[in-house]
View 1 (cartoon, one colour):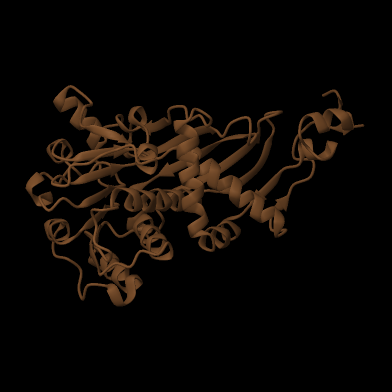
View 2 (cartoon, rainbow, N blue to C red):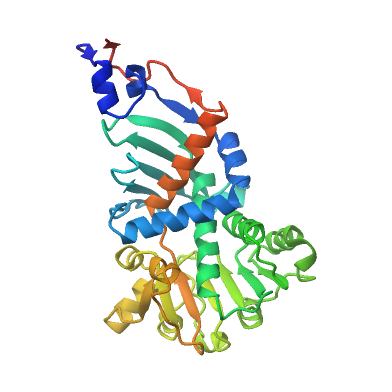
Length: 356
């Protein structure tokens, strides 16, 4: 391979401090990602908020996700989420996340993921980091954003908070809700594995219900705000009348609610085209109704106060999950890791030899 000749002037034009920076590549392991994320919950909510607004304004771009599925393993999938934060920030990238639901039966996390950040000026990767933590954190930040803007004027100052599904995502959502200043009056939990629900209640501390709920119906009817964070592949919550008290519903796992529940609610998504695919509950509602008029708007519109809701109907927030969120959080993690000297630099990672 021929040598690559780059001048200092060319490097400056590409927005890097030195020619060597063109080919610098680092790795950020999971323990570093975890330390940065868990100490930055409030900041992450604002980062996710700004990413949603940049997407709404056409600054950040989020192509469709690509699903790799397996004929012999129908529950499992690997998803590629590409994204571009725009010319002003100068980063693009991709998250590669595997979802193996049966892992939990063997004591393993369901999801594993990597995130690659690419320099927008040259296309060269800047770093690689563990991303299941980032994925959980951006999901939790999105949930908090939904709770904040959809619950305003609807929820009491100390709402009753119910969780259906008590795995890693649910625990991250609870931690971020509390860290961002919400004070639940009660935290209730239900999971098909009762021990997971009990662990969730232990995590909730003094606000926890004394015992796990006995059914999904008990959680729904007894909560002002409900978080669905399961691995459900198809709807099992079929009764719209369970939601007659007009709660805020954070439909994080996307496939728990029957179309009838969606059609009887006001609905907010992160991106309409992204969310209405892959047999999500809103997608099934579209297939059943033949239209998308049940979508009230996007979370960016809610943040900007552009949406109005019927106080007598539940409001359901269904965030499909957008690569721009992973990228925005990953950019923050990369910056913090570099500032603290906790990024592992890999010299000569790329094949090109440089001389100047």
